[in-house]
Image (tube, rainbow, N blue to C red; front, side, top):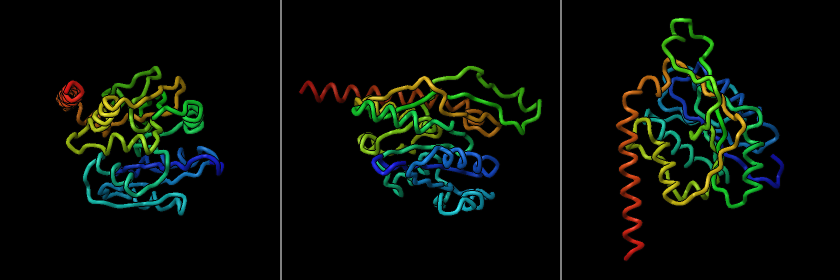
Length: 236
């Protein structure tokens, strides 16, 4: 990035993601001439994730912690970085080459905008055999992606909302985004595909599918409680 633009902290949480981590990091480092602080937070991996992250040399920082889950891994990354803009990338996903360029343009144009997202195209990981592919559901059309890997957010705005909650097993970002909307933060969804989301057998959306509905109901109840409390306080 040119010197007159803010630096970007890119936080990549990983747990036993050696198969895909290198490709994810490559997609970040290929974004262009940006001042990036790329941090891999290893959440208790027992495979070669550390070796892969460290193979990129000084371009990528590496931090290990005992396994605490994705929410805490992202929070650790936030505490260890200082960029005025924050981006996340799951270790099995891939940024499109224009991801940061498109999002930075939107934040520069709309100075009151807190965060910007993009669309995602999903693909079945190529190492899966035909039997494995048949067990997975993979949408064929691009979709708006309100997920961490597709977001670029101002740090000051993120801090208004606060860290990810570890109370949720798989819905921590849905909870964070609900809190952001309750705090009246502004977001923009770009029409471009900025992320390729990998579908494979160990996606949390696959392995923990049955937990989604219960977690989303908890998130909805918490949001309603916040709104009622805010309305009551406003009426006092």
